[in-house]
Length: 102
Image (cartoon, rainbow, N blue to C red; front, side, top):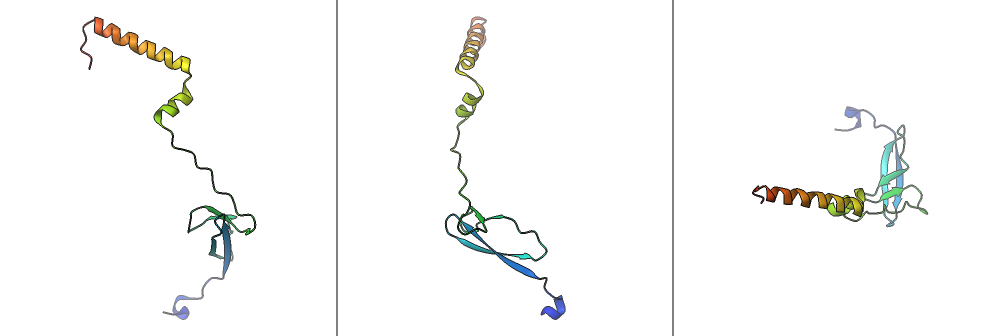
C-alpha cells in the first residue's frame, strides 16, 4: 500500500535530544506539535534536553527508607518513650487481671 491509497503523510520535524551520558536521541514530531524541552532518553532513562552542551543532570535518587526511619520522622524520642511507657503499663495491667497475652 503506497501513499496514494493512504493519503499524504503529515509534515514532520526531527528533534535531537542529548542526555548527561552523551546519548543522542532523535524524535520525530508533527510540524504543528509543541516540541517538549525535555525527553526521557530511551537508552538510559535519564532526562535529555535539546542543548548538547548543557544536558540536564541526573535526578538525585533517594535512598531506601525503612519503616522505622519514617516513624522517626514523625515522632520525637520523647514521644516514642511516652508511647512505649503507655504500652508497657497496658500490658502489665492486662497480665495482673489474668488476661492471656500471646
